Length: 156
Image (cartoon, rainbow, N blue to C red; front, side, top):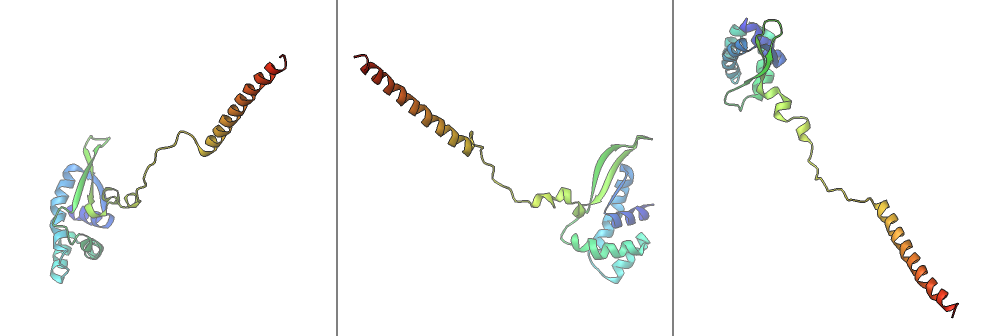
């Protein structure tokens, strides 16, 4: 059972299982991944004797081992996702650490951060309209100031 689950984890990079099985699988697969860092015939045969799946072994040595070459250990991550509906077993996701783009901040994290500016209280068009209203009000006041002077001159 552990060999099949390990093969599935290597091929799919993430599997959903119970927490107990994930912990057992973690202790089973981490030494195999460590063994895959050295690509020799002997290490391939040792890993194949545990996995018994040719495709999984070639995937492990071709794609996974170059990606985890610098990592000193801890190649898998257990994420608990709650309890299973039928028997209330605690479920989790077991995944390879270097293959989760969401946790690594891959796709969306690469965006450049833009500087946020404070929004002005008035738009440019409104400012121009406000200036027109101020000028119109000033002209109106000037006309009102001139009218009483002319009105006072006529009766006198």
